[in-house]
Length: 115
Length: 114
Image (cartoon, rainbow over all chains, first blue to last red; front, side):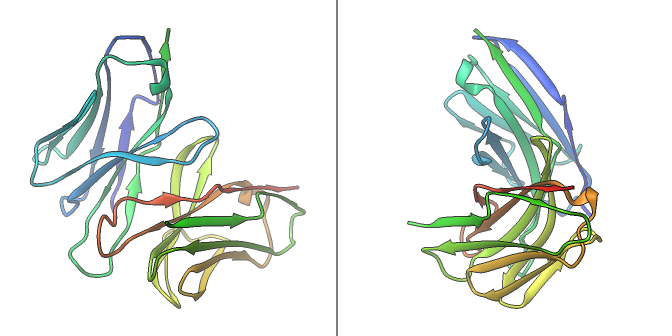
């Protein structure tokens, strides 16, 4: 089955700096790579995703990159703000139009943005 | 709009007792349903998922089982709890016809086995 490794497990940055979280996956069939954010005491929520036919995607201060050959993908947050402090999860999955709708999550990165 | 409910919110059970956690979704039909366990605020471990009534996929061999008796109801059970079953259990749903990878999580159940 799929295995997703996520690094680092904790990350502390100063407000305004950039943060990068990296993930690797093992199953070359995976073609969906979502990222979730979980604030303290809240539920995980999807913040951005990338598909295998795209190398990079941006949404304001957040960007994701994907290298299918190397089987790794990354989350980049620029101009970090205290409200970016949370646990971030990467995930990988594939769907061929059949019955597989499973995501494999990384173990999470605790991001702390210091004011 | 769609909502997802889980109950109970917290539960303290002795070792060897049975377990039943319930999850229901409103405002959608034929959702994918998922049970996760989250350890210490991290690590979303997929336990079970279901694409339809009576269809359950088990991801991790363990002391737990799941059932989907109705389209929007997902139940996590155990006949005899172990200490290692303690944790935070999250139910989630997604739309199989659209952004299936966007999962919507419930508020969770904090289970303590004593």
